[in-house]
Amino acid sequence: MLDAIRNVNWPDNAAGNGVSREETREVLLRRPYWTAPGPDGTTLVYGLTDAGRHLLVSVVAEGEDVLVVGARDMKESWDASYTGAAPPPWDIGRPQPAFVRLADEGRLRGRVLDAGCGTGEHTLLAASRGADATGMDLSPTAIRRAREKAAERGVSARFEIADALELPRRAVVFDTVIDSAVLHVLDAEDRAKYVAGIASVLRPGGVCHLICFSDRQPGSWGPRRFRADELHAAFGDGWAIDSLTADKFHLNPFHGVHEAHAWLATITRK
Image (cartoon, rainbow, N blue to C red; front, side, top):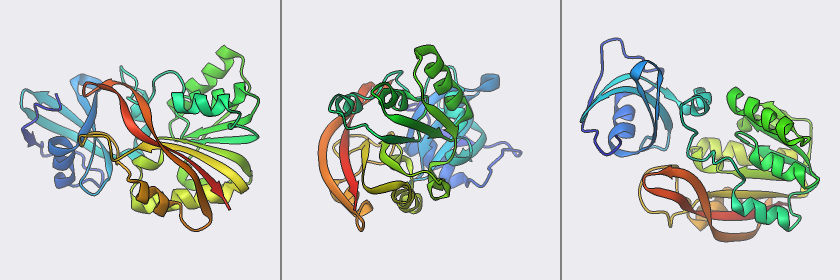
């Protein structure tokens, strides 16, 4: 469907929810990255505006024409990512291999926070290796599934419905933070807030392990691609990037790919 869209139309009562028609056109015509079946015969289209805003657009599609039913900022509708007929691209049902390697090396240790944990695979990985692990995510559906997985596997871990942009409100201090594909879905303002939040809950000498799409990934679908210098800039004062290596981010197949070029960063709070 993504490649077939040519014409975008709106009924008079279409719900914009703070999203302009131009932003909706940008998502549908230029930067869609994922679709899923929606309710009542609609299709949910996820995409980026030219300014980097992630939107969820509900449409009725007929060939090259789509009728927009509604559009929302993904920050306000993240749970919809987990309620469709198919899992979102990043929810592959297992930990990312990069984090399995880190766990094998004993680097997911101490009190661990998995920020934006989704359905909990990395939280459960850390907990299974002996860490005191907490996962947090905006999506109640994802957290419910994470708790179910913990019970099914007999793994002790905590899961909370919480916003990764509200980390400074937490009283707990962590030794390790996991970021599996959170940073790259945030715009510039929220990235700065997020990095400051990580610093507020990570002890001095604590480590953040982060994976995000890299600028080596071709195409415009999906989240923002980061250059190495952009990651260094994002984690500037108060941080030391210990390693920044090329890696792969595994995906549920879409756009004909099942993995994307990524950066794996190990970053220490000074």
